[in-house]
Image (cartoon, rainbow, N blue to C red; front, side, top):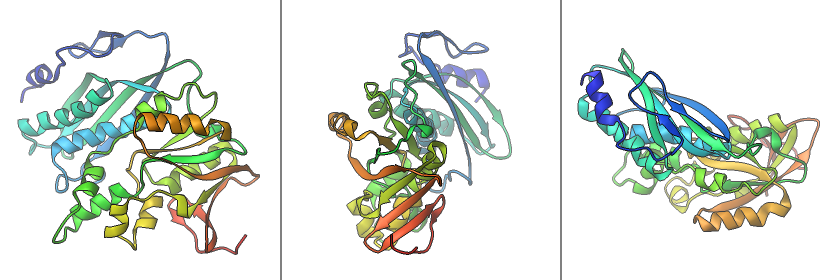
Length: 321
């Protein structure tokens, strides 16, 4: 497909965001706003971050944009625009390219987002790079550094499902779990949930892209706090526990790519969180607490004792505390 033909095919018939001044088709994108603007960029490389052996190009497009939407959600912003830069190998067909953009559009439509530009070149390895933009009311950014002593820790959804879905695709048995595969290919970022919490004066958020073992440590380090997680409270789907009883707990901690939200909030705001989750039919689970500390760390408590949860997993059992 010639470049200008591709541009013609992917140019939106209209823009959902009224702030667009100039979108696809010029040298740059122009918009105007009276709010704070959030930018995020995510890059996916074939055979590093995705494989066309386990997902078609429609799912690749959806999932690539989902990573960006989840980052916007972690900042508490309303997704608005995205631009796409592609490096494509010669084996990509016109149908593959259109399916990639259709996958992005499937998610973009759910979040009222507009495609506003990008670039496409040929190369020796496929790369999908997306830059997304969102809006924030002034001074309502939700930062990893905002956890405070006495906060409660929460997470949306269930964890480890995406890793279970990858296992289903990489090592299929006599039957496969459509639920886990769908959770891997088509995750649901929680942007609408986060953007609807502007009434809260303080809220710490982080998106679950690398697993809560990593995300919780990022919050602890940025905030200078100790996070206490209750292992038995970490939400795991019945499907994952049934199909992978030996791995479910580990994958819930470090499987990654669920694109759920991990956060902390003052105890007095728990009901506001729950009410917002009920409005959107989102599962919300309180899984721990925050305490002041001279040593930022994450502790995982269970009936067997307490472990230090490292970014890539957890250490061997420490002495009981």
